[in-house]
Length: 106
Length: 124
Image (tube, rainbow over all chains, first blue to last red; front, top):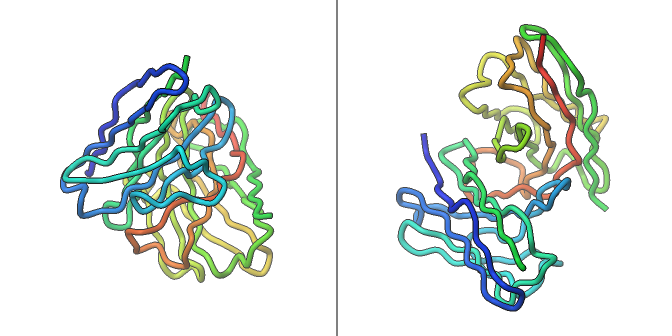
């Protein structure tokens, strides 16, 4: 089975840049998607196809992918960005999620 | 506004069955593939199953193959997940979610939006 590896947690001060990584074998050959899940809420897509931002998602969110690692970057993180972030890719017809990264902004 | 509303969750004993429903509104339901994703208490997201727009292409996560069946009723804008022979480890919040296209055999689809989830608890 295909695995995506994320750090358990990332902590930044308000206004700093938070970078969440997602690693997987030959990840550069796949699209990566990112979801934000705040406490008690359903997930929301914040980045699709590596680096495309859905409408309504703030410009401080950006995505990139190179080699075996994809990165979700929150430039100028705000307290409202505190959440779990999950990366996702496809392995054939199976969707695979990373284990999630808790981003703390304080 | 696109809305997905799950129902049918509850407490069930191991080995028994349960059927979840997801009512879709705000978009042309039979234009899009649909999926189920679950989240065990305090854990991460796990994709469960996906179904193409007309129901002819299905995909399942390995641990639910042969036990779960995904289906849809396009006339009523409903997505279903029939769960048989339930196990303790199937305990989770089950989300219904929409793909941006009609197929399941694609590498470029994401999940948006998500419903609020239906809680399934498997316990004796």
